[in-house]
Amino acid sequence: MTPRLSHTLRSDAQDNRERILDAARAVFLADGLDVPMRAIARRAEVGPATLYRHFPTKELLVTEAFTDQMRACQVIVNEGLADPDPWHGFCVAIEQLCAMQAQDKGFSAAFMSTFPDAIDFATIRTSSFTGAAELIRRAKGTGRLRADVVLDDLILTIMANSGIQAATPAARLAASRRFAALMIQAFRAAPESSPLPPVPRLMPFTWPDR
Amino acid sequence: MTPRLSHTLRSDAQDNRERILDAARAVFLADGLDVPMRAIARRAEVGPATLYRHFPTKELLVTEAFTDQMRACQVIVNEGLADPDPWHGFCVAIEQLCAMQAQDKGFSAAFMSTFPDAIDFATIRTSSFTGAAELIRRAKGTGRLRADVVLDDLILTIMANSGIQAATPAARLAASRRFAALMIQAFRAAPESSPLPPVPRLMPFTWPDR
Picture 1 (cartoon, chains in turn green, orange):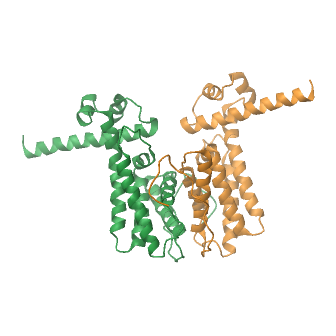
Picture 2: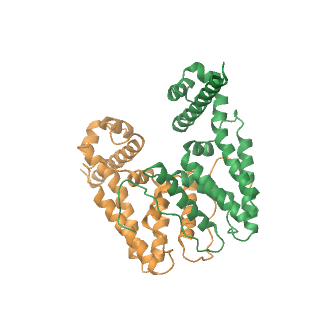
Picture 3: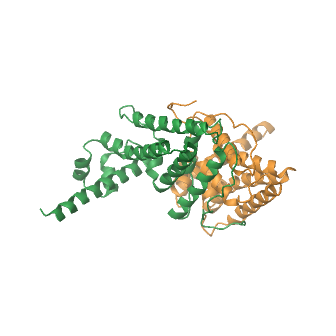
């Protein structure tokens, strides 16, 4: 096998894995965790053998499908914690969580799902939530975050962001940017005259304004 | 027929009408407007004859199913416009729109749907949107609403509110109350130290905070 061919095969395997995970997230999101493995293979357009080679059990598939998203969430929270300016770290984390979610429906599924006890998912979520609570605590320490903001408000923000629709993926991302800026505005202890991001095109019809 | 029996019959007919409209909204929301009438009758647990007695054509059913919600929206906007304090009218309208939506999934469907041209739905929506734009214009006149807020931000708020989930209907309503208060905070030109509503229980698990 030449290095080039080997590379191609590895790349195909990686493509299949990603396609299976995307399909799994879409199917779990639409129909819950009880769907049969063959439904996921069909959706991913791979054979059952390929599916089972990557994920020998459904438990593994469920865990992997959502762990990727929770890890991405954790990376964002950790970057916020590493920021020397805790208020800035808090704001960037909100912006990035909203942007990631706008671009990846699976994130919402991962975030909202309450998994059966059999799958140990609680650990990584608890870790993200502990980090986010610390982000809030430090941002309050700067005096720039309202004292009555709690972790639930961050969760509320992410849930709310998941409800936003727009005519195109670009408009969807722009809408989440504006929404994140509004939420940061809401969380401020005192106002600053920071301008809002531009208004995206939300729906395929127009209305009287602007 | 005694007055009492007549009242009962009218009340049953009204119950059926509401049940059909609820079923129609749920089915249209899940599967779009192309579903057959019999699917709606089945969901509403009424016979086809009852369905057709109330709504002789699907066009009528679609229009009625969503017009109710848009009218409710318009009532809220008009109450806001009638408020002698335009900023107060603006805030109450946001609170009521979020609360109504939290209690009625059909509202989101009505709000988001883009209907086929055959159904003249645009008129009532345009009327609500024109009213909401006027509500914003007047609130800006008081100097208490940010000058860069546009109608899109109200639409963004309502879309976002539709993404909020909670463990119980009461918690869902409480979550929307808190969310509406945060959005009003975001829209303020200058801060006021108004406390936020209480934090509801969002998810059936706990996290480190509070």
